[in-house]
Image (cartoon, rainbow, N blue to C red; front, top):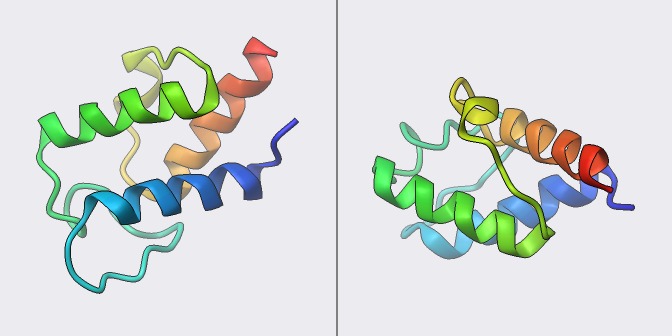
Length: 83
């Protein structure tokens, strides 16, 4: 099973492929404010995460998520629940 660290590394890798520039992504990176992604791009990214991890992400579970670290924790929890 994927550890939280594994999930976070995968999210950082995938998010890094979506953004332009030399932004160094960390757990503290704000997904919208720091990356410049709009809401549609964020939803596309969530769909990519669903495919990557083989899960379904209920929108209410991530509605308050702001940072890469928070997203990693939410995705990791969903992976554990669905396994």
